Image 1 (tube, rainbow, N blue to C red):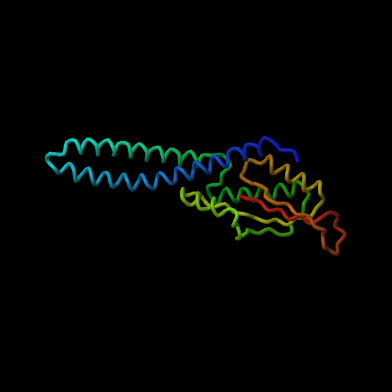
Image 2: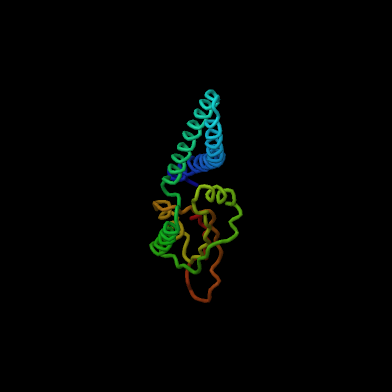
Length: 192
């Protein structure tokens, strides 16, 4: 199987992005709690008359925590700006339109499509996505009828698409139909 530049970039970038999201999510939660605690302690120390040294330490700690919190906000926005990563239901609708257009352009007949609820493989990604207000990944299963070349053409079209559509699994079986439709029944599972 020949890999293309998009697949290589996905294999390189996605683990790094998910790792960055996990780290930024973990730091922000601790930092926001620590930031509010430091502000309370700063107010308590400033009320005491002989606490200049403690006030200076708390001021420095507060400044450090505010910098970390701003850094978290920048990383969160950077994670949301990654091209191709879905951020709303509108992007999923666009991905479904791309799938339908690719199937139509490839002369494949769509028999059935449905969202899968057993996305157990993606539970960790869903937890990370929820932590930074991104929608959880969704798996869709498409059942199509057509020839091998038509399916290959559709997968090539999906590779060229700019929307976030990742084919995860392709299955082929004989078309159990009384009609004289040439081709096979294809089951395509995609991540959008």
